[in-house]
Structures are given as structure tokens and as C-alpha cells.
Image (cartoon, rainbow, N blue to C red; front, side, top):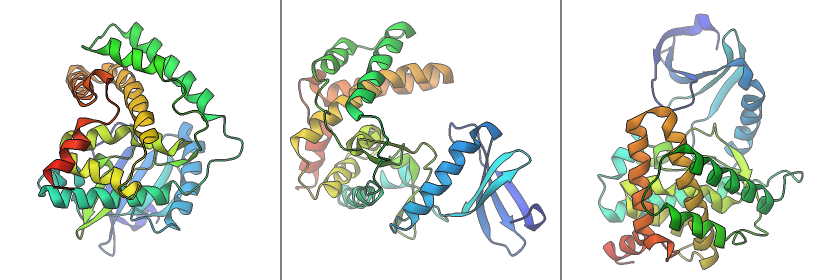
Length: 296
């Protein structure tokens, strides 16, 4: 699409990336999603576009890439427009059984995304994530903010450094949770692959905390859909580690976005501590209570 083909462009002020985002309407009246990233992100964007082409072939319900390239303001990507609504707000209003069913769909979609293997040159996951964990602990200790139970989180991390040893690696969406999903025509649509990465596919579940806070049956369904209702104990041990690690880094991240975001992350840290009973448990309480609420 050329600029002269655009009839209107309405800015979209959502998200944390800093990219320019628009709902554009062409002269035929068709809507598209336009994203413009700064020039310094051109390499990352081009890599993303190549990966999206591979994901599309897996029949993943997603916002599909129509066109991409370089423009005066950086790198642009034109996607199909999804007529629907944000899953986060919508799913929370569903009855528990439907929340669970939608979560199962999300889990099954994720298995398709994870079917793309990581490059053979990828660094060993155990070494890489232990280094990341060291950095997260160090940054948390230096940031000056504390939450109750943080000592239990760090203790769990230090005791369980080998739970993800020898884990395979795959393509990752990078931010897979209910906030990056939409509902259109009653179906779940996955959006925003911009933080894609390669790593342990189970690490992708570290964002499930957002699902568990807004719709616990959805979160439980997502796990069950991924594992055909039989998640192994090894998964739960890994997930506890990944969520513990992410809880520390989220507090540090939020400091750059003001007090309100910091409060969000501190509330989430309190939820995490409760779900895991101070990390004496590895299966979070939201999973157990969600199953009880819908008699699974």
C-alpha cells in the first residue's frame, strides 16, 4: 500500500513499545493495522517478518502480515485488521466453563507456535537462563524496592538452578498472555509477536500470571490445552522458577513507568507469593481452585 492509497489513519495509543501504531483505512474502505518502528529496529523487524511467515503456515489464528518495508520514519508493517475486542476484558465476563474452553484453545495454539525449532546455533538454555537469573537478582537487589516474601523468591531460585537443565528450545511468541489476544467472531486471535525469541517453550508460560489474575479458568485451560490435560510435575517446577525470576525483574521494569505501574507489579508479586504459598508449593493455587470451580 502506498501513502496515496490511505484514506484515513487513526492513531492507536496502546502498548509499551514506543512504535507508532495506526488503524488505517484504504480508499476501498478496508481497514488495516499499520505499525512503524524506528530505523534502529530494522534488523529485529525484518527477522520478525520472516518468522511471521513461518507461523502463518501453521494455521495460527493471528493478525496476518500483508506488507512490510522501509519508509521515511523507519520500518513499517501493514497487518490485517481484526474486527473484535480485547480478550482480557471479554473473557473475564464469560462463565467459568467458557473461560476454560477459551484457555484450552490458547494452549493448543501455543503448541503450534512452539513447533518451530530454535536455530542450531542457539546458546545452551541452562547457561543462558542462569545468567539472566543472576542479572535479575542483582538488579532487584540494587533497585531499592522490596516486596514481602522476596527472600522466599530468591531462595527458591538459588535452590532450583537445575530444574530447566537439558530443556529443548523453540520459537517463542515472547509475550503470550490474554492481553495479547483478541476475540473475533467468537474465536481467539493472537496478536503482537514483536517480542519473539527462542528458548525453552515452557518459559513462555511465565506471562500466565496475567491470565490467572483476570480469569483463572482461562489460565488453567491454557495449561491443560497445551498438555492434553496432563501437565507433568517437571513443567510446574520449571514454571515456578520462571515466574519467580520474572516477578523480580517486573518490579525493576515497572520503576521506569511510574508509581501506578509499580503498584501493579507489587500487587502481582503478592499474588504470586500467595499462589505458591511462599514457594513451598510448585503447583499454583489458581490452577487447583479453577479446576474445582468447574468440576474438572
